[in-house]
Image 1 (cartoon, one colour):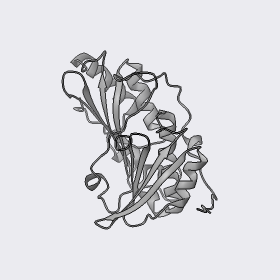
Image 2 (cartoon, one colour):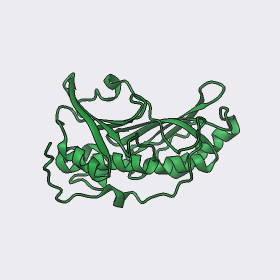
Image 3 (cartoon, rainbow, N blue to C red):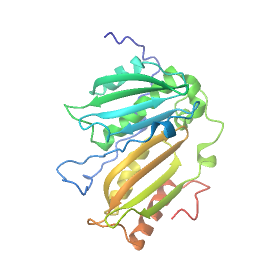
Image 4 (cartoon, rainbow, N blue to C red):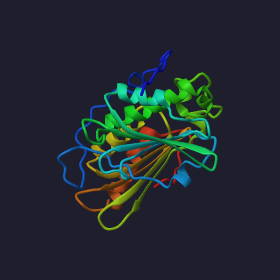
Amino acid sequence: MALATSHRHLVRPAAAAPRVPLRPLRFAAPRSLPRICCQSINSANVLGASSMPVVLIDQDSDRDATIVQLSFGDRLGALLDTMKALKDLGLDVTKGSVATDSSVTQTKFHIMRLGRKVEDPDMLETIRLTIINNLLQYHPESSEKLAMGEFFGIKAPEKKVDVDVATHVIVQDDGPKRSMLYIETADRPGLLLEVIKIITDVNVDVESAEIDTEGLVAKDKFHVSYRGAKLNSSLSQVLVNCLRYYLRRPETDEDSY
């Protein structure tokens, strides 16, 4: 299939998100590879906002491939330009599909790297930024609806990311062996890498994650543990304080832990 497209004025996401050196993540499962397992989300809940750009990374639905879902009302189609941009990263797009549900067009890509799903946090963030960058380039009307429009778009969002988007961080028990970490904060380049580095720097293991970009806001969930058990109150407090310090915004919720 011919994938003709133009890359005028393309802002390379890698330049906006400098590589953050990360040590291998600690997983409760076999630890031969650092990887992120992004759980799937009910598409009716996440992708149902008709005018909100949404990028969802899902590594739970397919054993062998990373699945990326995009929606922006009824504006998106086959996205051959995005497919080519992903291939330019050295990724194989093994399958693509377009579906319409309640006036929302959902485009889905199955992506592999070297014959398996993408497991490197740095590459996952690059994929996320590449997709958002293409939305800004080929659908400039998304600029005022995405946090990245502040950095790369033709029109910044009316809401100011550093002022109108508060940061919330919550840790809750999720059984005896793990805790659930909820983070909601203003989106920005390199955010996923920052969060993972903060978590691992306090010796907390990331077992799985759900990475969701909804317009101006990043809404992430991480299943975390410490030495095979849930986080105690002291460690939870340390983790929340670290995350709130590095992700803080003027209106960070003081009761977010």
